[in-house]
Length: 316
Image (cartoon, rainbow, N blue to C red; front, top):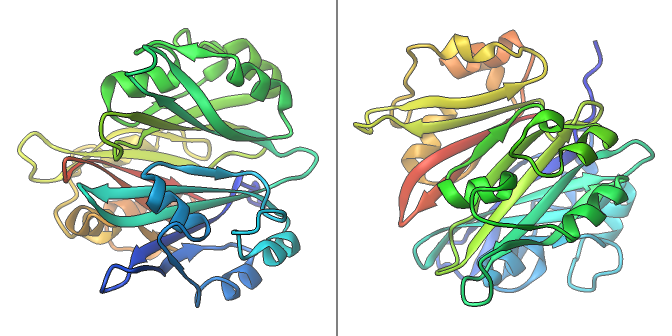
């Protein structure tokens, strides 16, 4: 069976150099876009330079919806050849110090349905959260609704993440009472959502939401891993998968130890990580991925005050 195309087509990780003056390529998942990998792996970006550098300077995610006509985006020609139309950069900090920037690239065609949204609350200006920017593929009506929606803490997927300060997965968005745009989601075919806190700007709240459709899912599987109460291991808190909906049962009684496998390494280092062959890893994660014929994954840490709160995985 041929794999479905995912809404996210490329992921990259950029990390500071030894002297912390530039960002260097640390790894990525490029799928069929190997020519874009060649245009990427020797690059570096200074503070406030390029998409990774802009996110470093801003301390919050950046959504770039025009890759071809933005002067500071240096890979416009390569992006055009690859059919990429949007880039999203998300920084990860430990206090004042940048650990990494994760970059996602999306494409566009006649049936590219899904959304990546950036929401923000500034408590000095408002008690509500509003969408700052986003990328919506072909579902412009869903974008219009998002732009005219304001959320209180605890309401809607961004508001739920705001309230809990934790990643949240929502299945069946078209029928979820707490997802305020459920009728619009049903109409355009968006069915699952991941909300991700980005708690790296002092006294500000930023939330990214990834809204997935059946035809072009954001990713094929999502997992949220959290430290157990004694911080002796990571346990699966939640997961969503179209290929194997009941996959979480494979993790019953499983705790990922510090440094064990890809996810344990993210816990150990605080850095995001990718694998192009997670299905060959001799851990419960690798076994579960192999059973679903999943091989590419990115694991993203969520830190607060320098401590690991969660690790979110997306499988492509």
